[in-house]
Image (cartoon, rainbow, N blue to C red):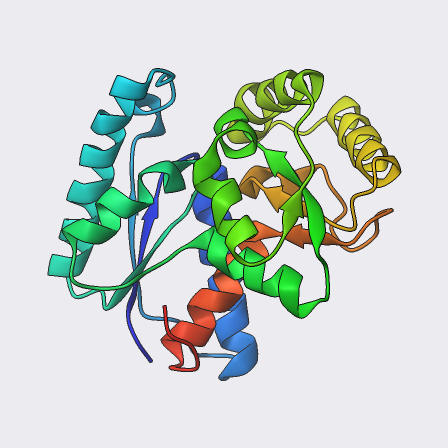
Length: 233
């Protein structure tokens, strides 16, 4: 089994979810006592949380590049970045190491295409929903994306950063996400892309008005397939 490095710490909730999911997938596929060969570096998200300006992202890239190099030096044969929003600096990080990095949006795009969907609505943090770094990857797989609504962007940022990233789950947040997803169905979306690891805390992925493609679940499955040698990065 290939050794995987995980750049984590973009909330302990997210890092814990990646570890748990990958371990369970490996156990299910191999044997009950098998543990995956993982190297995890949990970064201090407080150092990255407040970044909003473009120039600040060079600092983010530097932090993630250093992490990627440390994991590569420790023996990782491939990497994943355990956060949707941090894929904004994916290209810089990927260029800094000689090992592959599995891009979450590419695997989400392939999953949507394989399921026969041609359009979807993207739900996540502000930069994931409004900037091009994530959206263009889905478009490259033939997926049309509904434009984000400003009011939803504000609501989601508050729920994600103020509540979910510190492990707080409320009924209000669950109702808000249900309303947003119902609205996307009315707007003509065929599917929902859940592009924030923590959102599964308030979204029933398997029982909704639209099929929900949870990025973390797809990313973890792709990572396990890669670890077993079934898929290229």
